Image (cartoon, rainbow, N blue to C red; front, side, top):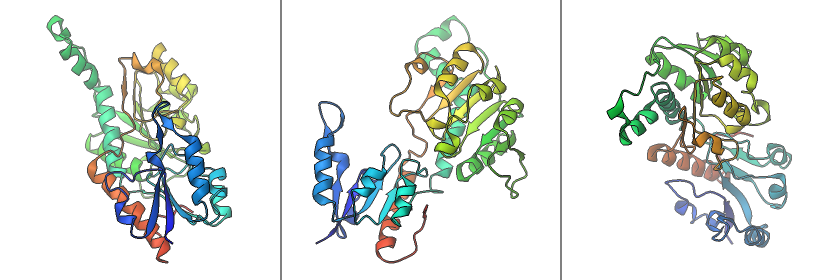
Length: 322
Protein backbone atom coordinates (compact mmCIF):
# COMPACT_ATOMS: atom_id res chain seq x y z
CA UNK A 1 0.00 0.00 0.00
CA UNK A 2 1.24 3.48 -0.88
CA UNK A 3 2.01 5.93 1.86
CA UNK A 4 -0.23 9.00 1.87
CA UNK A 5 0.48 12.69 1.40
CA UNK A 6 -2.04 14.99 3.06
CA UNK A 7 -2.33 17.95 0.69
CA UNK A 8 -3.72 21.06 2.34
CA UNK A 9 -2.43 23.05 -0.63
CA UNK A 10 -2.37 22.33 -4.35
CA UNK A 11 1.34 23.16 -4.80
CA UNK A 12 0.78 26.10 -7.11
CA UNK A 13 1.45 26.00 -10.85
CA UNK A 14 3.33 22.72 -10.73
CA UNK A 15 0.70 20.72 -8.88
CA UNK A 16 1.15 17.33 -7.24
CA UNK A 17 0.55 14.94 -10.15
CA UNK A 18 4.21 13.95 -10.33
CA UNK A 19 3.99 12.62 -6.76
CA UNK A 20 1.19 10.17 -7.51
CA UNK A 21 3.60 7.35 -8.37
CA UNK A 22 5.00 7.51 -4.84
CA UNK A 23 2.05 8.59 -2.71
CA UNK A 24 -1.68 8.37 -2.35
CA UNK A 25 -2.47 12.09 -2.46
CA UNK A 26 -5.33 13.18 -0.22
CA UNK A 27 -6.35 16.52 -1.71
CA UNK A 28 -8.04 18.25 1.20
CA UNK A 29 -7.93 21.57 -0.64
CA UNK A 30 -10.71 20.22 -2.89
CA UNK A 31 -13.09 19.72 0.02
CA UNK A 32 -14.93 23.02 0.16
CA UNK A 33 -18.44 23.54 1.47
CA UNK A 34 -20.28 25.35 -1.36
CA UNK A 35 -22.83 26.83 1.03
CA UNK A 36 -20.43 28.37 3.54
CA UNK A 37 -17.53 29.02 1.12
CA UNK A 38 -15.29 27.39 3.71
CA UNK A 39 -13.92 23.92 4.28
CA UNK A 40 -16.30 21.08 5.10
CA UNK A 41 -14.79 20.40 8.52
CA UNK A 42 -16.86 17.32 9.31
CA UNK A 43 -15.91 15.62 6.05
CA UNK A 44 -12.24 16.61 6.41
CA UNK A 45 -12.06 15.23 9.95
CA UNK A 46 -13.45 11.92 8.73
CA UNK A 47 -10.94 11.77 5.85
CA UNK A 48 -8.06 12.36 8.26
CA UNK A 49 -9.36 9.78 10.72
CA UNK A 50 -9.81 7.16 7.98
CA UNK A 51 -6.27 7.69 6.63
CA UNK A 52 -4.31 8.62 9.74
CA UNK A 53 -2.14 5.48 9.78
CA UNK A 54 -0.98 5.94 6.17
CA UNK A 55 -0.32 9.71 6.22
CA UNK A 56 3.43 10.31 6.36
CA UNK A 57 3.68 13.79 4.84
CA UNK A 58 1.80 17.07 4.77
CA UNK A 59 2.10 19.90 2.30
CA UNK A 60 0.61 23.26 3.25
CA UNK A 61 1.04 27.01 2.91
CA UNK A 62 0.49 30.23 4.88
CA UNK A 63 -2.94 30.41 6.48
CA UNK A 64 -3.35 26.63 6.76
CA UNK A 65 -2.72 25.77 10.37
CA UNK A 66 -0.75 22.60 11.02
CA UNK A 67 -1.58 22.49 14.68
CA UNK A 68 -0.48 20.27 17.51
CA UNK A 69 -3.90 18.62 17.32
CA UNK A 70 -3.41 17.70 13.66
CA UNK A 71 0.17 16.53 14.20
CA UNK A 72 -0.84 14.36 17.15
CA UNK A 73 -3.68 12.85 15.10
CA UNK A 74 -1.17 11.43 12.60
CA UNK A 75 0.98 8.80 14.35
CA UNK A 76 3.23 8.09 11.34
CA UNK A 77 3.77 11.65 10.10
CA UNK A 78 7.42 12.21 9.09
CA UNK A 79 7.60 15.54 7.23
CA UNK A 80 5.68 18.81 6.84
CA UNK A 81 6.59 20.81 3.73
CA UNK A 82 5.25 24.33 3.38
CA UNK A 83 4.82 26.23 0.13
CA UNK A 84 6.15 29.45 1.68
CA UNK A 85 9.14 31.04 3.34
CA UNK A 86 7.23 31.62 6.56
CA UNK A 87 6.39 28.71 8.83
CA UNK A 88 4.59 30.36 11.75
CA UNK A 89 1.43 28.42 10.76
CA UNK A 90 3.15 25.18 11.79
CA UNK A 91 3.48 24.11 15.44
CA UNK A 92 7.24 23.60 15.40
CA UNK A 93 7.39 22.53 19.03
CA UNK A 94 4.94 19.69 18.38
CA UNK A 95 6.89 18.67 15.26
CA UNK A 96 10.24 18.69 17.08
CA UNK A 97 8.87 16.52 19.89
CA UNK A 98 8.19 13.80 17.31
CA UNK A 99 11.31 14.48 15.22
CA UNK A 100 9.06 15.42 12.31
CA UNK A 101 10.98 17.33 9.65
CA UNK A 102 9.75 20.73 8.49
CA UNK A 103 10.83 22.38 5.24
CA UNK A 104 10.01 25.68 3.55
CA UNK A 105 10.74 27.39 0.21
CA UNK A 106 13.16 30.25 0.89
CA UNK A 107 15.36 32.16 -1.59
CA UNK A 108 13.45 31.16 -4.74
CA UNK A 109 10.84 33.83 -4.01
CA UNK A 110 13.04 36.53 -2.49
CA UNK A 111 13.60 38.54 -5.66
CA UNK A 112 9.93 38.40 -6.67
CA UNK A 113 8.75 39.54 -3.24
CA UNK A 114 11.32 42.33 -3.22
CA UNK A 115 9.96 43.48 -6.58
CA UNK A 116 6.48 43.59 -5.07
CA UNK A 117 7.80 45.74 -2.24
CA UNK A 118 9.29 48.19 -4.70
CA UNK A 119 6.07 48.20 -6.74
CA UNK A 120 4.12 49.15 -3.62
CA UNK A 121 6.65 51.81 -2.70
CA UNK A 122 6.44 53.37 -6.16
CA UNK A 123 2.66 53.08 -6.22
CA UNK A 124 2.25 54.89 -2.91
CA UNK A 125 4.99 57.51 -3.26
CA UNK A 126 4.08 58.37 -6.86
CA UNK A 127 0.31 57.89 -6.34
CA UNK A 128 0.06 55.39 -9.20
CA UNK A 129 -3.28 53.85 -8.22
CA UNK A 130 -4.80 57.25 -7.44
CA UNK A 131 -3.59 58.51 -10.79
CA UNK A 132 -5.11 55.59 -12.66
CA UNK A 133 -8.52 56.21 -11.06
CA UNK A 134 -8.13 59.96 -11.61
CA UNK A 135 -7.83 59.42 -15.35
CA UNK A 136 -10.55 56.75 -15.58
CA UNK A 137 -13.25 58.83 -13.87
CA UNK A 138 -12.45 61.97 -15.88
CA UNK A 139 -11.04 64.11 -13.07
CA UNK A 140 -7.97 65.01 -15.16
CA UNK A 141 -10.25 67.18 -17.30
CA UNK A 142 -10.73 69.41 -14.26
CA UNK A 143 -7.07 69.76 -13.31
CA UNK A 144 -3.93 67.94 -12.34
CA UNK A 145 -3.77 65.17 -9.73
CA UNK A 146 -1.15 66.78 -7.56
CA UNK A 147 2.37 65.88 -6.64
CA UNK A 148 3.81 62.64 -5.36
CA UNK A 149 7.11 62.16 -3.58
CA UNK A 150 10.47 61.01 -4.90
CA UNK A 151 12.42 57.88 -4.11
CA UNK A 152 15.81 59.23 -5.15
CA UNK A 153 17.74 60.58 -2.19
CA UNK A 154 15.14 59.44 0.35
CA UNK A 155 15.84 57.27 3.40
CA UNK A 156 14.36 53.79 3.56
CA UNK A 157 14.44 51.64 6.68
CA UNK A 158 14.15 47.89 6.09
CA UNK A 159 12.79 45.76 8.91
CA UNK A 160 14.49 42.39 8.44
CA UNK A 161 17.54 42.21 6.20
CA UNK A 162 17.22 38.52 5.32
CA UNK A 163 16.77 36.97 1.90
CA UNK A 164 13.96 39.32 0.88
CA UNK A 165 15.16 42.38 2.78
CA UNK A 166 18.65 42.21 1.30
CA UNK A 167 17.18 42.15 -2.22
CA UNK A 168 14.97 45.12 -1.36
CA UNK A 169 18.11 46.93 -0.22
CA UNK A 170 19.85 46.20 -3.52
CA UNK A 171 16.88 47.58 -5.44
CA UNK A 172 16.77 50.67 -3.23
CA UNK A 173 20.47 51.19 -3.98
CA UNK A 174 19.57 51.27 -7.67
CA UNK A 175 17.02 54.00 -6.91
CA UNK A 176 19.80 55.96 -5.18
CA UNK A 177 18.15 55.72 -1.78
CA UNK A 178 19.81 55.86 1.62
CA UNK A 179 19.31 52.38 3.12
CA UNK A 180 19.29 51.38 6.79
CA UNK A 181 17.93 48.30 8.52
CA UNK A 182 16.60 46.88 11.78
CA UNK A 183 16.90 43.29 12.98
CA UNK A 184 17.87 41.17 15.96
CA UNK A 185 21.56 41.31 14.98
CA UNK A 186 23.89 43.49 12.96
CA UNK A 187 25.06 41.83 9.74
CA UNK A 188 28.74 42.43 9.11
CA UNK A 189 28.49 41.67 5.38
CA UNK A 190 26.45 44.84 4.82
CA UNK A 191 27.61 48.45 5.17
CA UNK A 192 24.09 49.83 5.66
CA UNK A 193 23.38 51.66 8.91
CA UNK A 194 22.07 49.26 11.55
CA UNK A 195 19.47 50.01 14.22
CA UNK A 196 18.62 47.78 17.18
CA UNK A 197 15.53 49.89 17.88
CA UNK A 198 12.82 49.94 15.21
CA UNK A 199 11.21 53.09 16.60
CA UNK A 200 14.50 54.97 16.39
CA UNK A 201 14.93 53.88 12.78
CA UNK A 202 11.37 54.88 11.91
CA UNK A 203 12.06 58.36 13.23
CA UNK A 204 15.09 58.72 10.96
CA UNK A 205 13.63 57.45 7.66
CA UNK A 206 11.09 58.50 5.06
CA UNK A 207 9.89 55.00 4.15
CA UNK A 208 9.59 51.87 6.27
CA UNK A 209 9.66 48.52 4.44
CA UNK A 210 8.69 45.39 6.40
CA UNK A 211 10.42 42.17 5.29
CA UNK A 212 10.72 40.23 8.56
CA UNK A 213 9.23 36.86 9.54
CA UNK A 214 5.88 36.62 11.29
CA UNK A 215 5.27 34.85 14.58
CA UNK A 216 5.30 35.79 18.24
CA UNK A 217 8.68 37.55 18.10
CA UNK A 218 7.44 40.19 15.66
CA UNK A 219 3.73 40.37 16.53
CA UNK A 220 2.59 44.02 16.50
CA UNK A 221 6.19 45.15 16.17
CA UNK A 222 4.94 48.14 14.20
CA UNK A 223 2.66 49.78 16.73
CA UNK A 224 1.28 53.28 17.30
CA UNK A 225 4.63 54.49 18.69
CA UNK A 226 6.55 53.36 15.61
CA UNK A 227 3.96 54.89 13.27
CA UNK A 228 4.10 58.16 15.19
CA UNK A 229 7.90 58.12 14.84
CA UNK A 230 7.61 57.52 11.08
CA UNK A 231 5.65 60.74 10.87
CA UNK A 232 3.29 62.65 8.64
CA UNK A 233 5.42 62.34 5.50
CA UNK A 234 6.28 58.67 6.09
CA UNK A 235 5.12 55.68 4.08
CA UNK A 236 4.77 52.11 5.39
CA UNK A 237 5.18 49.11 3.08
CA UNK A 238 4.34 45.63 4.36
CA UNK A 239 5.45 42.56 2.38
CA UNK A 240 6.15 40.58 5.56
CA UNK A 241 3.16 39.28 7.53
CA UNK A 242 -0.02 41.04 8.62
CA UNK A 243 0.72 40.12 12.22
CA UNK A 244 3.80 42.38 12.23
CA UNK A 245 1.59 45.49 12.19
CA UNK A 246 -0.96 46.60 14.78
CA UNK A 247 -3.75 46.98 12.20
CA UNK A 248 -6.10 49.16 14.28
CA UNK A 249 -3.18 51.47 15.05
CA UNK A 250 -2.29 51.66 11.34
CA UNK A 251 -5.88 52.48 10.40
CA UNK A 252 -5.96 55.27 12.96
CA UNK A 253 -2.57 56.59 11.82
CA UNK A 254 -3.75 56.77 8.19
CA UNK A 255 -7.06 58.36 9.11
CA UNK A 256 -5.44 60.98 11.31
CA UNK A 257 -2.53 61.79 9.01
CA UNK A 258 0.01 60.41 11.49
CA UNK A 259 1.65 58.81 8.44
CA UNK A 260 1.18 59.72 4.79
CA UNK A 261 0.41 56.40 3.10
CA UNK A 262 0.74 52.63 3.19
CA UNK A 263 1.23 49.83 0.67
CA UNK A 264 0.01 46.48 1.97
CA UNK A 265 0.34 42.99 0.49
CA UNK A 266 -0.48 41.19 3.74
CA UNK A 267 -3.12 41.47 6.44
CA UNK A 268 -3.79 40.15 9.92
CA UNK A 269 -6.79 38.00 8.99
CA UNK A 270 -6.44 37.13 5.32
CA UNK A 271 -8.39 37.17 3.09
CA UNK A 272 -10.48 39.47 5.28
CA UNK A 273 -9.29 43.06 4.91
CA UNK A 274 -10.53 45.81 7.26
CA UNK A 275 -13.22 47.85 5.53
CA UNK A 276 -11.57 51.09 6.63
CA UNK A 277 -8.72 50.50 4.17
CA UNK A 278 -11.14 50.28 1.24
CA UNK A 279 -12.14 53.93 1.33
CA UNK A 280 -8.64 55.37 1.75
CA UNK A 281 -6.99 56.99 -1.27
CA UNK A 282 -3.61 56.83 0.45
CA UNK A 283 -3.53 53.03 0.76
CA UNK A 284 -2.57 50.55 -1.97
CA UNK A 285 -3.89 47.04 -1.36
CA UNK A 286 -2.70 43.75 -2.87
CA UNK A 287 -4.09 40.24 -2.20
CA UNK A 288 -0.86 38.70 -0.83
CA UNK A 289 0.82 38.33 -4.22
CA UNK A 290 4.42 38.95 -3.21
CA UNK A 291 5.71 35.83 -4.96
CA UNK A 292 2.83 35.41 -7.39
CA UNK A 293 4.47 34.86 -10.75
CA UNK A 294 4.42 31.69 -12.83
CA UNK A 295 8.19 31.36 -12.64
CA UNK A 296 8.49 31.74 -8.88
CA UNK A 297 5.48 29.64 -7.95
CA UNK A 298 6.79 26.86 -10.22
CA UNK A 299 10.18 26.99 -8.49
CA UNK A 300 8.52 26.94 -5.06
CA UNK A 301 6.44 23.92 -6.03
CA UNK A 302 9.48 22.03 -7.30
CA UNK A 303 11.43 22.79 -4.12
CA UNK A 304 8.56 21.49 -2.00
CA UNK A 305 8.45 18.27 -4.01
CA UNK A 306 12.23 17.87 -3.93
CA UNK A 307 12.26 18.19 -0.14
CA UNK A 308 9.59 15.53 0.32
CA UNK A 309 11.27 13.11 -2.08
CA UNK A 310 14.69 13.73 -0.53
CA UNK A 311 13.33 12.80 2.87
CA UNK A 312 11.84 9.49 1.73
CA UNK A 313 14.91 8.69 -0.37
CA UNK A 314 17.14 9.14 2.68
CA UNK A 315 18.87 12.23 1.27
CA UNK A 316 19.68 15.55 2.89
CA UNK A 317 16.80 17.99 2.88
CA UNK A 318 17.34 21.05 0.72
CA UNK A 319 15.72 23.66 2.97
CA UNK A 320 15.12 22.23 6.42
CA UNK A 321 13.58 24.44 9.10
CA UNK A 322 13.81 21.86 11.92
